[in-house]
Length: 230
Image (tube, rainbow, N blue to C red; front, side, top):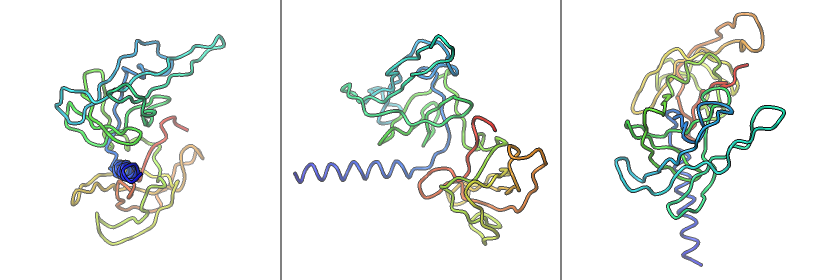
C-alpha cells in the first residue's frame, strides 16, 4: 500500500512539473493530423523518445480512429493518442490550434531537429522532419487577434522586471509589439487595445503599453491568439 502511495505521489509530482514548464511553440504533425481539416491521408506512427538523439523509442503517437465522412459533408472522428512502449494507451495528445481546425503538438523544448512535446501527464522528444513545421511563440503572437489569457500575471511594467505602470485584465485585446529575454524569462511589450477588431469596425485605440511576462506560473502563455479568427 505504501509503495502504491509513493508511486502515485511521484506521478502527480511529475505531471505537475510538466504542466509548469513553459510553452515555447507549436509543432505540426501531418503524420497523424493530415495537412488540414478533412484531409484524406495515410496515418503514420510518430516515435517518442526519452532523450533527444536516442534511437530507442519509449512510445508513440498514433491515430486511434480515422476520419469518417458523413454523406451530408464534412468530416469527424479523428482521434490521436499517446501509447507507451508496451502498447498501452496513455491518453489523448494535448494540442493547440495554429490555424482554423489545425491542431499541433505543444512544444516545451527545441533543439532542432528534436522537439520535446507535452503529453497527457509527461513529456517526450520527437524527431522533426521536413514534413513538420515549427511555430515559435514569437511567430504565433504576432497574429493580429491576440488577447490576455487567464494564465497571465497582469502587471505591465516600464521595462522587463521594472516598475508596474498598469494592470491588464483577462480577455483584453492586445497587440504584441516586441520581445525581450531577461534573466532567462521572455517578456512581451504589449499595447492594450480599447476593443477587438471583431467587436467593432472602428479602429482600436491603444489604452496603455507595458512589458508583460510571456508566461504565467503555470507555464502557459500570458498572451494567446484566436486561431479561427473572429
